[in-house]
Length: 438
Image (cartoon, rainbow, N blue to C red; front, top):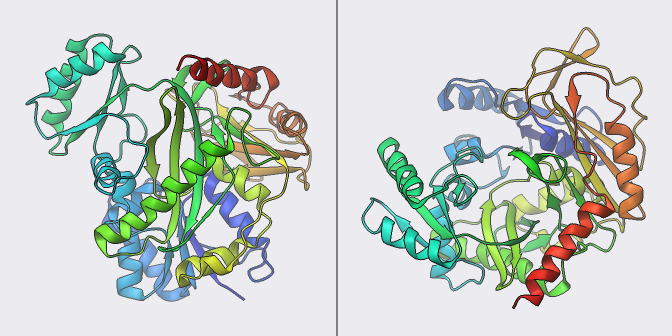
């Protein structure tokens, strides 16, 4: 039997826990939560809670859900002070997510495909000339270095409506931090996520997933943490070719190897590449150093291999000995979120789940930003509950997820268009238009 532990509280972490509990080597109720890592004033206090519990419980390994504890070094402390292995990189390796400049320059240094045009700046010298050059070619993106919770990136003609606005934003960033900024060309295309398990030497891919960041139907409204996602039964996406998927897989593998060459450390955890198909080919948007949310719900719902075996192989460096397999099923994930999300979500109001269909092999439920009080579920202000439908086709999976999400009663909403033929069709048309424009 194994005794795993997790850090985090969100839909992603719930999916990890449920998947581990389905293992005969773990069992229901046997996954420790070392810390939810929420609403704790300082890293030292948060780390102290984790270390104290880990020192007593001595888990076999710890899986870190969110990015912040990785960037701040919780893996370093668990491994160095207690000798407890982790599914998650050290702070030095987590720069793959916490430093956009580090990642761009790593990819460039090791001649890995996928980088867009970019430059890293440490002051305003040269910024105006570069922004003007990119603007003349189609637009630019300003990315502050460091973790920004998905809110720091600003794009020309979406957030920055003039060159002066772009320059002002760069000045504002340099005035507030000593970190560099990355300025890149603006890309047009379709995004997808490819997550890979990595033991520092070997990578095993999960199925590709497409996330939906915009809050409202038709990809409108503000960006969110992700309103839902889908994957397909053929382990592609309707707009994704096998050539593009292989290129993304090769980039993930090359990045894992480059990290070892660069740092001398083995990356043990999840390599989460965000990619875009453009008229110029495949481009790497960013890396995350942990499971994605909501994409985790899709891939773990479809995973056939015992997740506990995969995690054990990651920490031991024997991932190549574990056959990682996924069901030939489509998945659709839909998040139910509070009214006003993401900018002004309602909090501390209850939701009624009595009409929601029961969980089954074809429907999974993952609680996230909710708390249980006297047997009732209370919204805490972020994405509340995710439902994943699994089916022989995307249409079947979408129907199951929609049936569940629309049955939640309360001050909530969700995106009914995720996974539908109409929305997916627009993705396919977009890629076709880019291909024909070459």
